[in-house]
Amino acid sequence: MASSNPDLEGEAAEAAAVEDEDTGAQIAPIVILSEVAVTTGEEDEDVLLDLKSKLYRFDKEGNLWKERGTGNVKLLKHRETGKVRLVMRQDKTLKICANHLVIPSMKIQEHAGNDKSCVWHAADFADGELKEEMFCLRFGSVGNCRNFIEMVVGITESLQKSAAEESKESADAAELLLNLRVDDSKETKAAEVLSADDSINPEDAKSSTQTKAEEQPKE
Image (cartoon, rainbow, N blue to C red):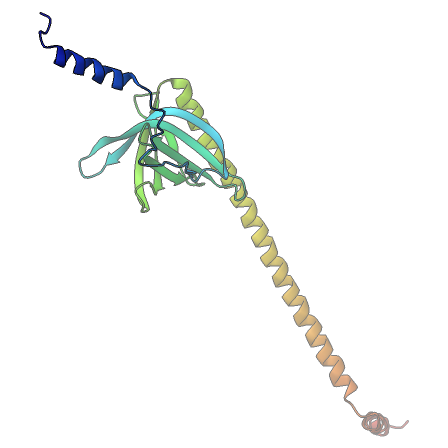
């Protein structure tokens, strides 16, 4: 039913006209947000492998596997040091759930009874302190799991070879140093003998020769 009060109708029409009117005023935002550069710590590293997976950590106290998160596991190689580390962040939150170096002694293998999963031990730093952990990664396919295992095994074998070569070079250097010391000792003794010979007085040598000649029996 239409309103019988013309004053009310007039006020309503005036309010509607005010709402539709564009005053052209500029309203500044209360909070000004500026762009902030976010660093991940991966800027000096090259990605060797990047695969979607789900990570589990073995809880020794409860004797069971506990999920740490789903995300992308990466193998990153530092451009200067050549060191390779494994890093994994949870989806959405980007919280680190695994962060450790791949070292020569690291052993990785397929999880028993599941060819899409693999297990290994590592000294991990994801929680801000170094802790020995046993991890399990579950991939979406057998192929991804095998690619990951092969990549890690290849890295550890390369590190073992480099360590063996460095050990041999160190041993060779130590042997060479020992030989040099022996030669120096021989040269020192020879120098001492020559110095002793040079210190003999020529007159004493002549007198010694004459004495030896006089002591010889005459025929």
